[in-house]
Image (tube, rainbow, N blue to C red; front, side, top):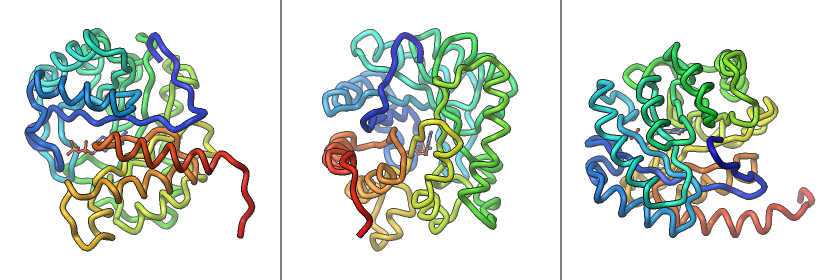
Length: 277
Ligand code: HH2
């Protein structure tokens, strides 16, 4: 994507850089370019190959942010990161106007949690040469938790990404620029999140690399006795390793160092062909 290629023959860690006042685990901490850049340096040193800059929280029930406000949050951070660090930057946005401006500022991937809900998004990405993450969600962050009824969660997630995939291809986005994401926590219950990770193979069979965004999410707290978001990094590493074993290759996390260590050790083992017990 953009000016570079990322090899997926080993796990890639995508570090989360939320420049929002209200994200569920790190809201407000990296809102300004100075602290955000310091965090970016730390994540690159810890082994992140992609940094995901987001200016709008998508936690359940989060308030929507206007285009100008979102640009004002993400553009200075993208520019500062690209000026100093040799790392790929993705912009986490649902708005084509924000994506366009972010790509001009140096981002090389658009991470769209709405999978092209904005009708202008596919063209914005196509013209730029950027990579595209298509994530599964139903409804919007404000309404999604009322849409978590599935007969077969893995099959339905795969089927519901077919429409956005077709639109991406029709707009001229080359296959090797596209990544799919099951959308952990987006219109899914805790049980459905677990089943989706366990059955990632169903989504892998669609034929694109998979990104997993489990970091610090509520289902991890639920398994671990209700611990708060900032204590869920070891649990997150467990989810990443399980996802790696079932076919994910890109991992969107807050704590890059912990995920990097867990994934590197797990990958050193999992790449050796094994036998079922
Ligand atoms: N999850 C969040 C945001 N963006 N993008 C992708 N591709 N996959 C995800 O699972 C995903 C995502 C939500 O997490 P976070 O950024 O930590 O919180 P918030 O939305 O409150 O900023």
